[in-house]
View (cartoon, rainbow, N blue to C red):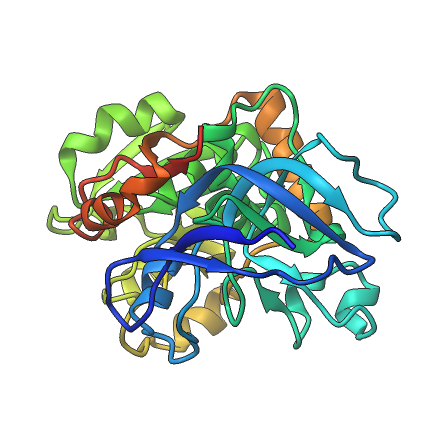
Length: 336
């Protein structure tokens, strides 16, 4: 049985080291994928450092995977050897719960992450259940599409599920690894898009990505001037802020949606929520169906992640740059 070669974390916070493992027999509903590209997501960093307390060492990180199918299980019918596919955060689900029956596998209580308790994509190959490997449209280059499989779907889902449309006014908080993709999707939905950033130098780039407006949130009273302005505010940052002005910036029935995770608990005044029938929410990834739809939208609208490419052997160097916030905007490892 051929072994899979990758780079694994062997202890919390440690550098990745060469690692081989035997994947065993191919399950009937699995596919094996020969990996060409794998994005580096901040979630990988959390897993490497065991920030969430669920890492099991050694393990190979990586869950923004693109490659070609190299083997299919006996029950796989929709994928073929040689087909280019992508894999995001999810590798499995129970298949029998209410969420799974609704096609909302990402909400399954037994949802299994690609590199949680198993080995992921910083490797030459990976195995997942076939339903979680989605075909990649021909129009998308692998290096730009890989981050869409986690970062892209993470911002696409809340915009789509919030009903963003040409009548909507949307704000994206943070123009980084998630935010620069969110701006593009919000613009593709036809919304008026406002980029929020603490970095004034990002204004030109935010506008080039599709933002109609730019707000430097370090400016005093910048948010107060926008009271009652937005239908959806999507925050992609991992920072503690006073969220009350963001609630006030919503129109009646507006939504403040979190995909970034502030380190501390959120404190909010409730009356503005009640008076304006506003809401606060969060969003995870999406189902395989959502992933396919998002990739189709990206292909038709020319949406892509801005990436820096690194050979797989330089994963530690790429991770170090990401930790220092030097990557613009997503790092992608390649076996090519």
